Amino acid sequence: MHVHAHPDDESSKGAASTARYVTEGVEVTVVTCTGGERGSILNPKMDRPDVLANMSEIRRQEMERARDILGVRQEWLGFVDSGWPDGDPKPPLPEGCFGLVPTEEAAEPLVRLIRELRPHVLTTYDERGGYPHPDHIKCHEISVAAFEAAGDPERYPDAGEPWQPLKLYYHHSFNRPRMQALHDAVLAHGLESPWAERLENWEREPEWDARITTKVACGDYFGVRDQALLAHATQIDPDGFWFAIPREIQVDVWPTEDYELVVSHVASQIPEDDLFAGILDPA
Image (cartoon, rainbow, N blue to C red; front, side):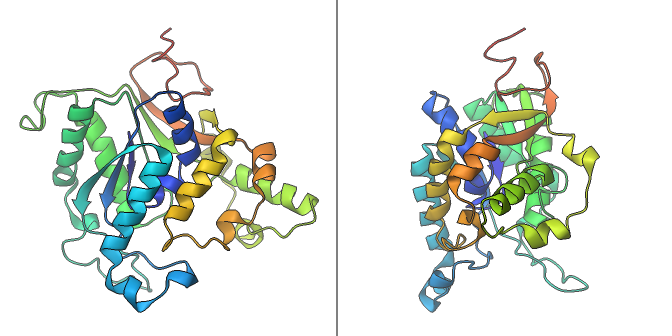
């Protein structure tokens, strides 16, 4: 079970490993916390009045297409997108949005889904949210809370029979070593790197990068990932940075998606190459 903040996050984070596991017969569920109603239109071709007027429905349709491409089950938690608070100082979040829902309350529908679907593995964002969007931070908070509460019969007693997922992971694919390796490879091929400016301003945090425990080989599924990304036409510019690095270089240089094992109720040796290590091959 992958828990994400908005439609499109499931395609930009962990989509290739998702596609690999689906192909191997794993039942994968994507939980989407909000409808992405306040997200920006990042594809110039979709920046049109008719799209703006129907953003909620269009984002839902995009999610349905990405879901079908990845081969996953997808569930909405039904919270309202908080939007990106832009300004200095940042304005208050809009009333009723996901970022303002108390964590204990917002975790309840996720606990209910965990108990209904009984996943063995749960993935979400790190405590920074991957980046500091209020919905990503709240997604992290409710995912950790639900992981801890789902197996406790005294917590949320009306949300179904208790079920304890065995492993909790954070996504770490947007890490500096990966981006540096891709950047260097692109330059070596005489191409322009989309990561040059970002890397110049990216503070080195070796202790943060060292948190990666698990690298899932999934280069064969980067094409599926890209098709799922393109399904989110309002969010993903097909001429933008997502596709600026040839796929062949990506597969050659960094053919994995990277995770941090945060909690495990099974024995698993670190480093891992499988989110199900210790579950499918118990020690």
